[in-house]
Image 1: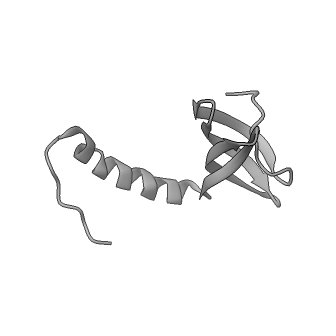
Image 2: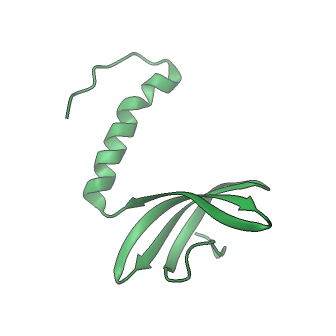
Length: 92
């Protein structure tokens, strides 16, 4: 993916990552990393302040099961963005 250096904590080991969006003030990326012996995927949002990137949001995906749940929920909601036929959400 990318050889770009992501502004994550020095205690984290970056395995790989991909920038989703980057401007002069905002940067979002998906980063695979290792934290205290555990691998995880994080979605970051940073904002540039005083010439340094500051983390504003971080969302962690810890495994395939969690990702599948997220993916299914997003897929069910996507029609609401495009005006496609509505659906009935199942209560969990």
